[in-house]
Image (cartoon, rainbow, N blue to C red; front, side, top):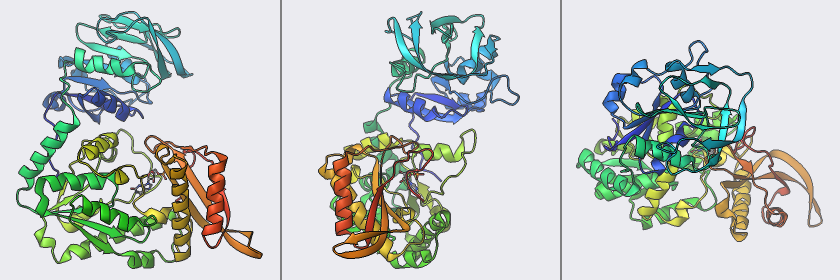
Length: 518
Ligand code: XMP
């Protein structure tokens, strides 16, 4: 059972045809303060009627409308009287549905193009002349359907934006959601507010107030368990719950022995300071025992996930009957990825989370953040006075150092990775760079190299510094740190961390690499 906090307000829905940008479209529309959700492309017109959206966006997608079994929406969707905006593949669906012609192409138009605006009455309201837009498509519209007119064009596409302004159906070949399209946000805003007439009612303050009210109503006098890590999501959940039900909330912080340097005391102090009732469990020994001798990355991840559930279950065993709810920091992208996206993404890494807990504990689940994106959670956290020390810390993976230590996890490698990572973080802070990078740490494996420490020969460990820039961890670039900062990190690590003879810097981006080595 999930906490029913779905905001009751005007909304736009995005039908996902398999685009990598569906979440971006959704976020941009929310930035215009209009509530927006993503659904699978094959939602029936009856389901859509029930949702009662003010407008519908068809996302892009990798398919071609003429390919057999290419994803198509329910045909009756065009009879609901709801405005529709098709983007890229979504645009081609509209053209195809109304008997325009799509030209099949073997080459993709990819990159920036100049879009000349021909009609400024609705979708391009307040626009003038031309803008840069971002194209990424193969097929294009060769002839536009009857009832539609050209609203904008580019040199290579005479119908880059079309509209049937009476029926309020629009199609655009370019991507308004990416930042490379100038004023793309305004196009989505014009569609959502001016054309679809959705009221801009989505804002974080309302979300907080209504969520707290909903929790109070739904939970009543029941008791809630909440696993916390000091990360932004679990902290924000705990603070929201604390506001709603205070005395009936029990937070649990499990130390698996693979945390960052000094993390357990920092997190416990900060969480206690903001008034949370947190039970601290030091389970490091049992985690490290279970991980002894294990070298396979996926196996390590699974062991950490399983052991977390075991610890949690044992700890709450005696008091379990007191609790009726388990709270989790699930976010909107997790909900969508795990349920309704078009194609299953292949699993690169099994992420450790507390997903298995609810069934094992037989508790009802509360997910107060399940409608929010990460940047929205940050806004909630800020308003709820979550301390900056927690808010601004780099994200840390659930399995912790288990995924930053290559090969078997040993006390020696934990010590090296913790100390060396602390130096990397401190030097970034000193250089005023900590806040501008996404993650930064020092990994360690089994490779060794010869060094000279003092007058002696040291056959010591090689440490790998990894610092990356990223927006959402889906892609990442290695950070081009100034040489003097790298040099200080290296000098300090070889001087201050016993057993390290060499320091290297990871210069591969994601893809093809990932952010964590395991
Ligand atoms: P990768 O290594 O896949 O990581 O490029 C992408 C982002 O996810 C974080 N990460 C995790 N976070 N549980 C988490 O909560 C995990 O099991 C996990 N594995 C990776 C990683 O730190 C990066 O930010």
